[in-house]
Image 1: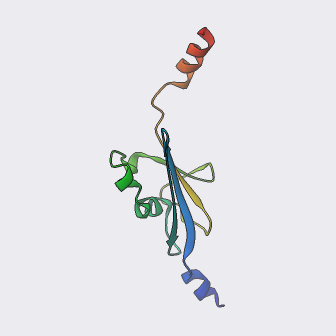
Image 2 (image 1 turned 60 degrees about the vertical axis):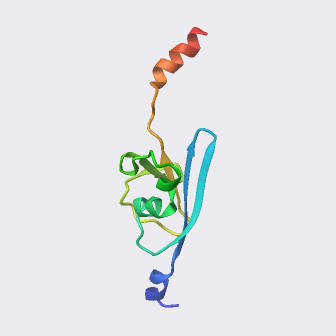
Image 3 (image 1 turned 90 degrees about the vertical axis):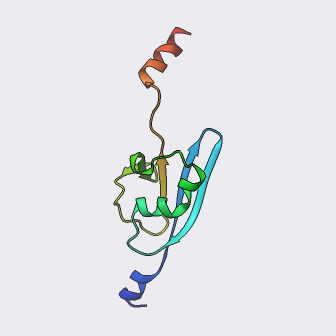
Length: 98
């Protein structure tokens, strides 16, 4: 197989998101050069969770934060992180008071 053919082979990636008890996991076949943000957009996450503002969410690949324009590699798992809605330090203080 030539290098050009390898570059044109589609990639297998997945997109994962958790909200409460709902889990979202989609396996996708995407063209080489697809970014993390593009994979999330193609995954259907916005249709399942219409209240999400995708451009404001943080992304990661295998638990490492990445920028939305990171080009994906075959087998990557894009993780969509929810914003923190409570101050972790305040919660830790509440637990210590208990």
